[in-house]
Image 1 (cartoon, rainbow, N blue to C red):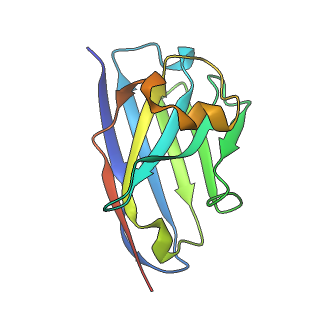
Image 2 (spheres, rainbow, N blue to C red):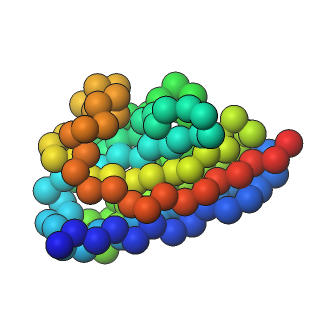
Length: 129
């Protein structure tokens, strides 16, 4: 049984930073691409970033490019999202997820949510102005 423990998040002022992490168990972590998603109140869940199985390939949504960094430590079965220069528009519930595929191929990898098989429980990020 796959388990995902998500941590990090919280409340910060605009311009601040936060780091999210997800630790997976019950699966062969380095066999899967990983993604981060977020959902703001009243909006659909949207893709933020993805990373390939070995970390060699990453992709970022335009809204976070240059501010967020996705990474993974396969030895620790852990996925990370470092978020810098946060703005109120980044306020949302953030979710990590494991893709059934191994590669992060670009926007299509974070646009189709149904390919992601295992999801974290979500963590709230609130950015005040």
